[in-house]
Length: 285
Image 1: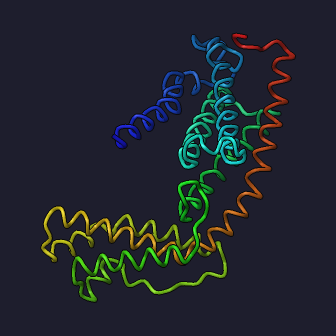
Image 2: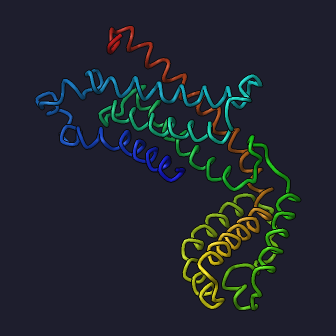
Image 3: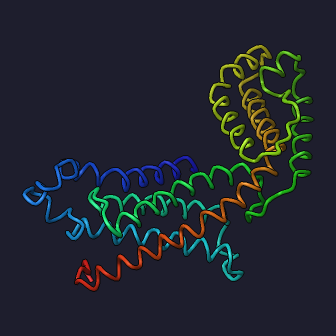
C-alpha cells in the first residue's frame, strides 16, 4: 500500500514538473523575438492564461507548503495534526513543484525583479535539498526530535546481537558486508558531509557483496530478507554513530542560511505580485 501511495505521489510530482515543459516545448525553444508570432504565445506568455496560472499556482504551492509545515512545527495546537515527517514530505512536495511551475511561468526569461526572485528561489530549493539530505541522516523520534548518540549506540548493539543470534560470520564476510568499520571522529562537519556522500555512493554497489555473503550462508528466502534488513540497519546506525554530531552542526548552519533566504524570496515575490496587480494582471480573479 505504501509503495502504491509513493508511486502515485511520484507520478503526480513528475506530471506537475515535466508536463508543462512537454506541452510548451516548441514555444519555449522559440527565440524570444519570434514568440509573439507562435500559436501558443497568448496562452504561455507570463501574462497569458496558462503562463499566468503557472505563476499563481506555483506561488500558492510554496506559500501553503511553508505555512503548513511551519504551523505544524512551531504552534502547539497543531502538534496533534499528524506526524511531523508527513508534513515535511508535504512541504517538500509543494516546495519543489511550486518553483518548477514558477519557472514555466517565466517562460524561461529571467530579467529584472523576476531574475532576483528566480535565483533566490533556485538557491532556496537547492539548500532545501541539502537540508533534507542532512536531516535524513540524523536519527529522530516520530515527532521529529533529534535522538542522542547513546540511542544510536544502544540500537546498534541490539542489532548486532540479532545478527550474531542468526548467523556466524567469518572476519572476511564481516568485512565484505561493511560491519567492521572503525570508529571515526570528525572535527570538521563538512568533512563528515563528504564522508556521508561517499558512503552513500559506495552503498549503491554493496548489493553484489551482500548477495555473495547471503549465498555463502545458505539461508532460506525468508532468512535472507531478515538478514539483509539487519545488515542494512546496522550499517546505517554505524554511520549515524559518527555522523550525528557533525550533521546536527551542519543542520544548525543550514537553518541560519535557509530561513533568511526564503524570507527574502517571499519578499521579492510579494513585490512582484503587488506590481502585477497594480498593472492589472490578475489572472481569473
